[in-house]
Amino acid sequence: MQPFTFNFLEPNTKWMSSFTQLNKKLRVSISYLSILILCIVLTGNAVAQIKKPLKITLLGQGNFGVYDETLSNNSGGIGLGLNIAYHLKGKMHPLLELNGDLFAGTKEAIVNQDGRIYESKSQIGSIYVGPQILLGKRFFASTTAGASFFNDNAHLGIRPSLGYLFTPNGHWLLKTSFTHIFKAEAISENPFGYLSLAIGFRF
Image 1: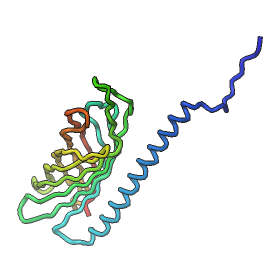
Image 2 (image 1 turned 45 degrees about the vertical axis):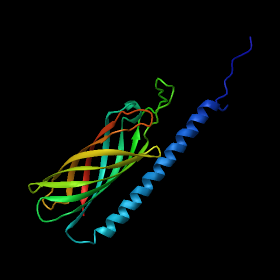
Image 3 (image 1 turned 90 degrees about the horizontal axis):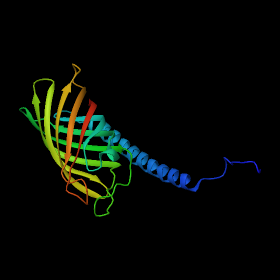
Image 4 (image 1 turned 120 degrees about the horizontal axis):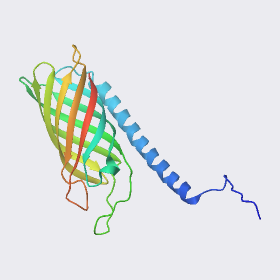
């Protein structure tokens, strides 16, 4: 009987192909995130020189998928945000929110009844604007609307938020937001919703 031998160095074509694709996607995601971090840091340093009434907040956040056509493909992730609020007299102020998020999940090829494949959401960038309301000295709330960008398309969304300044000097804050994207898929009308929990520093 001829002895069984196994060459551990023999390449596995299927495994190598999957690894190459995963490595490529990871490099692209890291590149997007690195560019976003650089832009946010440069913007924050420049705008930090501007005195009141402009308030600049840099945020790091964790995202948790709540509902989606393919929730397992986009179950959660991390992201960065830049909030710019112009404080006027009174309790209501205009707010601009810029966010960049990376979403992880199973990234499986899920097919609908027509045989079309749902696209997973790996990187999401968003620009939202709306009013921010001060609820006392430390609490604030906002409701913003705008566009989220992923899979080469812009998607309309809305984002209510609630925040709390937990330091006496008002620099550090906690913020929770819920983003609802109305039509998240090119092949369906179903929305995508995710919860964000963030910690931020206000310059």
